[in-house]
Amino acid sequence: MPAEDVYVYAITRAGVTLPADRGGVGRPPARLRTLARGRVAAVVSDAPPDLRARRRDLLAHQDLLMRLMDDGPVLPMRFGTVAPGPDAVLRQLVTGEAAHLSALERLDGCHEINVKALAAEDRLADVVAEDGTVRRLREAARRRPDYETSLRLGEAVAAALARRAAEAGRRVLRELTPRAREVAAGPEVQGCALNVSFLVERGDSAAFLAEAHRFASDLRGRANLRLAGPLPCYSFVGPEDRAAPVGGG
Figure 1 (cartoon, rainbow, N blue to C red):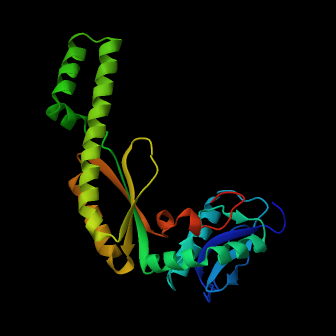
Figure 2: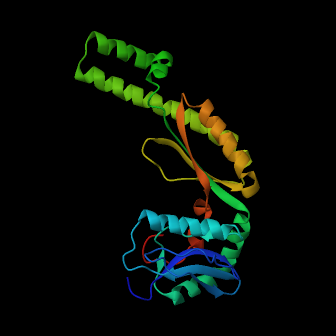
Figure 3: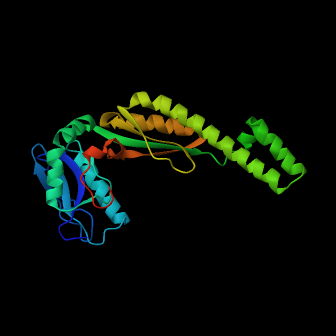
């Protein structure tokens, strides 16, 4: 990367205090600094020349965001967001100031919590008991095993497992949505019937997670729920709120 490239961690309100005990990505950890224009600022460092998604750098990026969120709202950049020099970041702060301030106000006092629902593939006995098609195909495969019958059985089982997970996911979404300020659908993930993030007020995070864990226990026979959070509010930052990247982002 060119020497002038800057790694962008977040956009904040102007006047943010950087944590003295945190560095940025790279080895040794890059020195953090702010670039400010008007009422907003970007938290940046020099971009490491060999930036990769190493565990230590992923953790450094996210840990810094969580620390910044202790002092106020943050528009988090995805890992790997690099801008072509400080001037590019400053121009973006100027042109996007109103949108950034609006987004910071919207995210103030919130965390993100992600919920995924995956098929409970270890519940074949339950599928056989409740799905007549699977039951008939299983009996046929036992009587006369052949490739076509086995293939149809496998497809029927996969469809039934996906259907059960989707039903569980709809229930989770229906019950948890009123507890969140906003909801954002995530990208499709193979084998995942639900991938959704909730914008939750920090004071409600513990109760939200407790309720989500209760659903995970109640729905274990129909879906495996994976919970992640509290997290920086990645899913609630739009393209207009991001620094101009040359890589990642």
